[in-house]
Length: 339
Ligand code: A2P
Image (tube, rainbow, N blue to C red; front, side, top):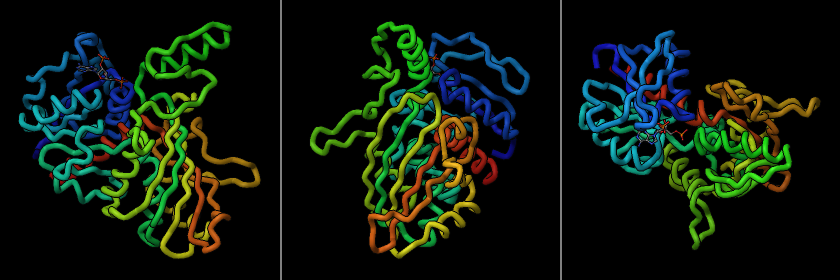
């Protein structure tokens, strides 16, 4: 690629797709042409990019001719089918689904953590799960100076992680509830308005963990290059539109002080410390929405660990941005910089 790349977006009309366009535009990504793909339902729709109206095309096996970088966010089964087709046609695929993440031939990249992995791709690069990214961007700079041995996570996940239709379901179900009407859910498995429920990913009947929780375990180990970190997560949907929060209790190899953590995180890339104890002002999804940084607060020594090796944190990050589109566009930037 010794020219500005031709970039394709697969799933351009979806919740993440729209943010791909916005990130490419806002970050002034150097591209020669942007091509938009979605299902036949959206063919002929127009979307605006850099003041130009672009037509959305139906995704077909021929869509990738001449494409240098293909950003995918149209679900795992489409990635599995079209990812290899795009790579074979010469594109580098950056895939937001879970289809390839644990494949040893596929780098799983968070640019603040393992940018060097960009050199190891064979045509497909995976973008990690949103809950994983939001947890580990602030944990990495701590892990580098004092190895993390164990993480206990509880997530508070927004509708956006389940796509545009789930966001609409939250709005419609809330309106119906306020009007005293029934709203049978069609996208998510349980009533969403004024409710909280275990993540909609499938549950392993043996262990009781759901797939989202297991993604956090396996992906963190792969990205950190540390297969021994012990991790347990509880993933839950909350009636919030677009930013995830997570409570993280983290055990380190050696004793660590909350002040030291606050100091390290205040200089960490991709992180903003929001930790105003006097004002009871800490990370919130409202504040995280629309920004690329992961907000971190409630930074405190875990009182339940007498060895002084554990820290409790609360984080919030925009699932559609750093949890998806922004991270993928940052990976594309690494690709361009490499060439
Ligand atoms: P469409 O809008 O035409 O259905 P979300 O994650 O918000 O649910 O978005 C999913 C994205 O994947 C949308 O852009 C959607 O397009 C796209 N998509 C769904 N099915 C297909 C398909 N069969 N071929 C191409 N794109 C698809």
